[in-house]
Length: 392
Image (cartoon, rainbow, N blue to C red; front, side, top):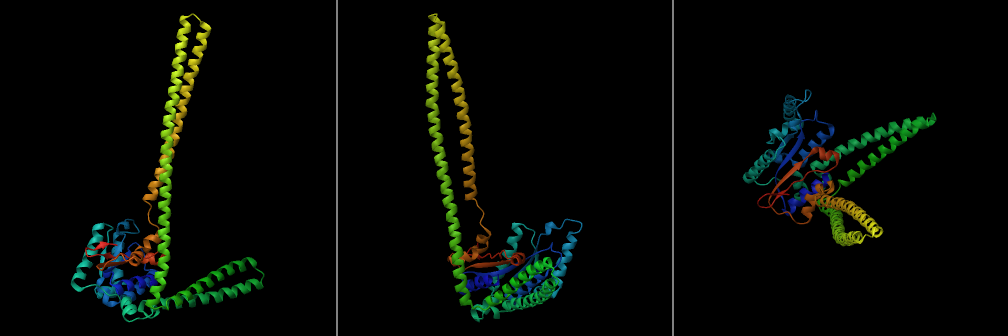
């Protein structure tokens, strides 16, 4: 995530495509404590921004509407907010250096107020330059030598040390289990050992990934995102092809319905004509007092009545099936037409837009959601680009 942020921030700063007006840092007020991962993210965030950018940061607490229970009241939220702003290792130092704390009530109006305030600050003091932008672009530092990179490096070193200690303990327990022929315990310990070895390897790879200059980072990420852009374009092409196929299927079904209607009309006219002829013959035979022939004509009339009824019932049944089929196709087309973008498409769109050259120099806004970073889903990067501040 740090590499993605460093690339996006560095590339927009270097090419002057998006100049940041400010940063909005989101925090759920419903969280009962500042977890280890949240605190690590906050520390890295401070290093990434630098103290000179603190005055351009809005620390926004969210989910106030969820404070409606006996164990989670409004007063609890106020107490948590006070704790966040009073502790210097949390938000206290940032508040002293100019960061503002706001309560986001979840409405569009509240969000626009936060954005408008940052834009006004931008008009007075110019765009904000983050520490990582200066370090990587201006000072030409590698990612591991930036303040944020050093913070992540420290956390990775601690994680590796913890994994190594756990591995030593598990290996000793594993050897003891084998010695005592406890195969069931040995198997469980082996799985735990393998999992720790993977985590240790991943932490080592992450450390290696920090050893990268901005130029190399651009080369790597540009190639990586080019592949992703191609995948997204292919996904879109497949959706369009599937939509076109459904449209062809719907057109074919409509043509069949029209043919069936015409065929039904002709068949019904034939049977009605035959029935009229049989009925006329019956009347003629009755007049001629030819009762036997009259009875046969009557039977023919009744048979034709029955055939007409069966034909109408079958036609109605087939029409209903065709209609249901057509509605199912139309529903599929609606889903394809209004399909929500995938998580990959949503999280990568700002970078894809940047690579595609669609952003223009203007007003920018960076929104960081720590929960998204922790889960690895992605970080919301919203650039308000263009002279009029169009949302990206």
